[in-house]
Length: 415
Ligand code: AMP
Ligand code: GLY
View 1 (tube, rainbow, N blue to C red):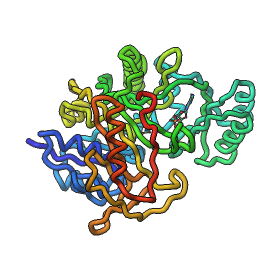
View 2: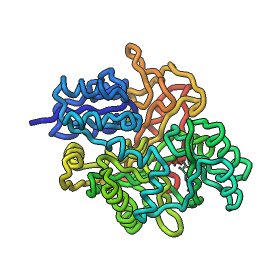
View 3: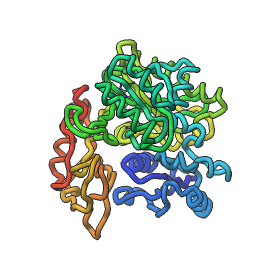
View 4: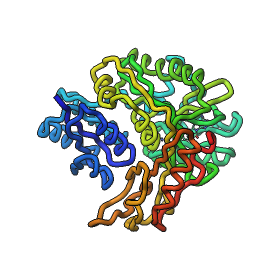
């Protein structure tokens, strides 16, 4: 029997998940809650919010959904997977308890310390004076992380003691993100990369490697964003580095979570850094990365539904990957990640001969309008990363919209 699938989310990552499911001969119908203007071409969008656990369970029951794939962290934190599992429905994603590997920096550090996962040394504090005393006595830069979800703004890499003090004051005294603790971590130096693995208890099914670009402007300048572009594969991550990351980071973490009584199902995303001593963890996420998923899933040649089902049911699954390179560039609203306008018309999309994901768009009659910070992602494909880059550039040139900007150096470390 073919399967009905519900995908939770509405951005580019969700669009990539929908497209991967669409390629599976095992899938009958794909729904997406809430989806967006681009996803609507590939799935039936339903107006349910990603945190509406009750609404999601109701939809699953009324529409004979066989599997729910959860995209965003907000849905995990709202307990969507727990609510579905409690009613006996299959859901791909970790429980709220296992998702703490992303939502609590201190929990993640404790697991890493206890199970010997390669990462930076750290101390945790809830008292400003103690934290500041500790930071003052250590070399710069100081890495200060708020212990909780802070929409990507909870990490400060302070280059001066003034900056470090201000960050600690902000997080511990002024409680900008709510009352909480901070983790002060050793500074790690090297190129970053994203290693996403599907995990089911002790089983790990690695996905292809990718690299994200978090800063807003060329040369890794400007503020941190949700990601301005990504590519896959990542040539500087050799087979030897990958094996080490798989065995000494991802596998140990998966095993540790099982041993702690919070087995993980879903995507365990290792945000890793390649230091002189080898790969180390910067952060874990409990979900597909955005925009990495948009360049990784198109490379999956084996059946994506098989993989999702294997993880949920704890079965073995082999994956096959295309050797081709995918490089995606995000087109964002001018001003993003700060203030930006919405509602500008995007022309020329019909002429683009490449994979285009909608991240924040809205349909108005036959027009497509900007409707978010990150708006579109244009993905070039090629035999090499350079070829994929040329293709992405050529296709972006066909898009006409004054309200958008993009980086021109995505993939530079690998060109
Ligand atoms: P996160 O939100 O945890 O991904 O951190 C945001 C960014 O801060 C990362 O992409 C890194 O560039 C930087 N960062 C975080 N932790 C460290 C660390 N221990 N050493 C150096 N840079 C770090
Ligand atoms: N690309 C970073 C993230 O998904 O958090």
